[in-house]
Image 1 (spheres, one colour):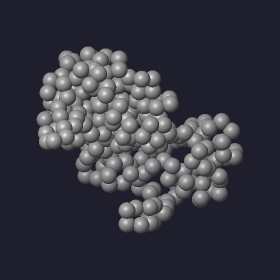
Image 2: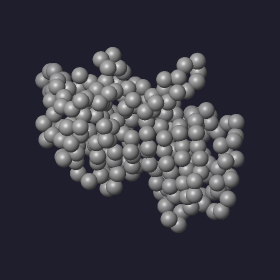
Image 3: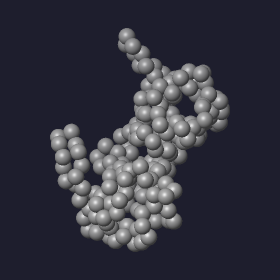
Image 4: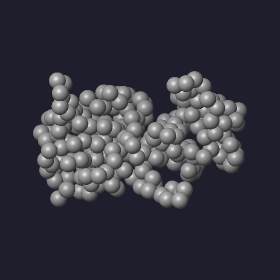
Length: 234
């Protein structure tokens, strides 16, 4: 059966990269004694894939990986066994069985929620919120983005679905996934260039809150959390 695992990453573990996270969960699954499936061939490996690798230095409450298991305990027992193996900075939040015909998490990622918080002493000058509102009221937001084929000018405004300023922070819901993936850092870089404010990447913290699939039709978005595709195992 296919299982979708939701987890959070916080604290000092935000500084480990995606490959280390993958190795971390391979060890955790073995220690928890879970009956995961392995690939065939000369070098078998655990069958697992991650929805959207998190950048180094970012924290998150909404990370996902899909695994395939031969048998599974209840969702509650699986969570307890995994979390007993977790170091501080990593916590498993849900264990959901997916329908047999479900697509893997990576292929359905469409949007993500982020929370940006300025570090103490690095908040831009007074009035930055009003400038940010004017910035996002533009019909176009053009940025130069490096791609595999070189540098390309893109309009990222259609990739920003929701936003809100709140005190020293910003909430963003933006496009994510393999088609259009908007990193908050790129948006803030564009805002700094447009507004004339100095906003280096080191001046704010980025926290990913959730990742969504899009179940909308007729060109209308209907974002649902990736864990909604599965059900708890009793």
